[in-house]
Length: 296
Image (cartoon, rainbow, N blue to C red; front, top):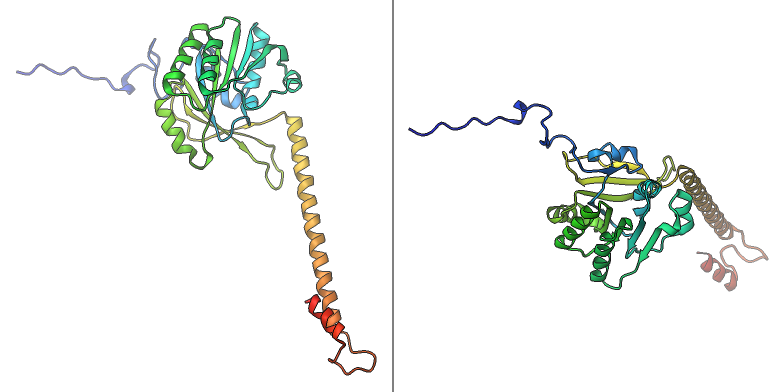
């Protein structure tokens, strides 16, 4: 006689809260420390309500150097205000503008830029920075990093409990396919895809960022988040500038249209002018016929 099979309890039969057990249909909670991102809409969708500390956060975007600072600067300002330590930038695509960072609260002397002449050198520099006790956070641009290398960075960040962002490029034409392929092999605890929101033609809203959460400890998020891409006052300036540019383009188009209409009317008047000087109508001078041909 076969032994009776043990009965299995489905998730609906389990208590809502079990110590040490995470329900996959809810955002993960646990001992993982976090730092608020500075964007309330993003914090509401992240486990614990912020960037994971001591873990890898991976950011994908069509072009490097576009939205990194808008995304992570509020958190860096909070982190540097609370504790000492340097913010290390490894192989950034653009030189950071110190006065702009200082105006937002990140002092230039807290930022250390590391240049690398190869992908291997950049990876080595990022790993060494994470192993330094005097480093608070690392921002690394590593487009060619393999999963094994990212796993080493993850372990180094966990050992020193540092903030770690790795920025990688993804082709905008097939971003969803590339992101899904990279997602399967990435050890990142958090994975985001960021792209800009262009200024609309009517300048009705401010420019910003569209953030899609590709990987998190929790249920998938189908809808993308819209976050502000710059300071509200700067956004107003950009919107006003776009409105002035649109008005100038419309005025220029109207001026060109008026000039074209006036030229057509002038050519028609030349063709319809009656013959003068006693010449029969339609038998103008040769120079007149040349002028008419040029007008046409």
